[in-house]
Amino acid sequence: MDTVKVYIIPGYDAKYRKGIFGKYYDIFCSWLKKHGYHRKPMQICIHSIHEFGKYLERKGVHSIARLEGKSGQELLMSYKDDYKDCRQYWHRDPDYGLHIYLKVLKEAGLITNLPSKSHLFLPETKKYMDFLKNQKGLKERSIDRHAYWTEKLLYSLNYPATHRLDIDKIDSFIEQECSKVKRSSKSNITDAVRGFLRFMYWSGNNSTDLSRFIMSPIKYELRTLPDILRWPDIHKAISGINTNSKLGKRNYAMVLLLSTYGLRSGEIAGLKLDNIDWRNETIHITHRKAGKDLLLPLIPQVGKAIYQYLRKGRPPSKYREVFLHVKSPIMPFTPATVGKTVKLMLLSSGIKLPQNIKKGPHLFRHSFATHMVNKGASLKQIGDILGHKNPKSTCIYTKTSIVELKEVALEVPEVLS
Image 1 (spheres, rainbow, N blue to C red):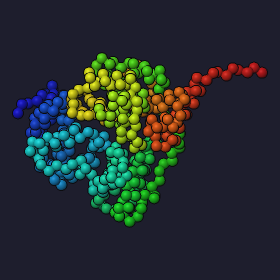
Image 2 (cartoon, one colour):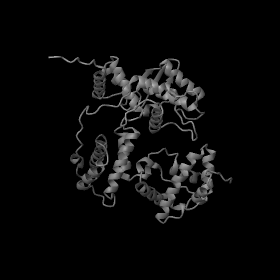
Image 3 (spheres, one colour):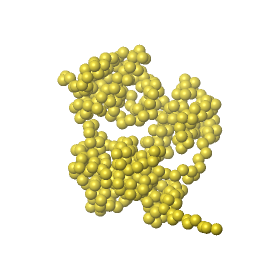
């Protein structure tokens, strides 16, 4: 097998050839190169595997045979709990890091019985996830959030070793975790815990409905204002994108969609080639947060930007998603990737941004809605385009409009007595 040079410095190469996965280093690197991975993504994958290898050594594991069957499942589950940033790591795309390495080992015939991602959760969590998907109809992102807090709760209770849900310990867990997050995120924790406890009662796994004792933090409606950009700043940010490069063509089309229709990052990432009807000049937005599809007119400027990207910027790919990475591995965007791309674009745009403003896709969404209010659109029209279930969700933009009116109001002349 040919040796693939991933690191310029020999010391790094030697470092990653040690340990439990050292003898399979060339197999892994060759697979990555064959599938179009560039040096940087390869280094990220290799480092991820190296960290897992060090963990196995700390556990006294020196053979990849231990990664099969029940033994492998237990090791992967405990590693998830041990990993310092498990929330970020375990919700990455499965083509990165540990998951892809296990896939390579299986393809090479070195291991056979691999646990799937769903098997990396406790049985109770897995049943709860199936319930959320099949009975409640939640989206994958919401299910992942519930699964994360459920797993964290169960591990804090030493479940299933104790096989007991203690309300005092649950209260302590909620208090501890809520102290680490801002007010708007506290309800995510309490909602997830309450939902799981209610499921345990309904499914007969717990004789008492402990969900009745979980209180959500008080939330005040319209307490804060959404971050917005002035419309001239939106135009400046868009016009500052260099559309001569493939990257610029992609980002330009993406930001035009955000600012013209107020789409969410998930709707941008999920947009497929089949959703664009060029003949009838429409865009079909599917799988919206509110569960309603939306048919939008394809505005000429937006259509031209997408067309230029598809013809001269989008790399050839089997994927049907519109927006892809320009460098290998060629993969579709995720909502997180959309957010990161928009943030980098805003930081390099040259417009003055307040220090504490959230520089993400929702900044364009909020600005779009406020601009529509100022143009005289009704809250019903705005809510339908934004995909709001509750009309109250749209009312927040009347506050931002009032704030803007205050800033442009005429100065009141001083009255002399």
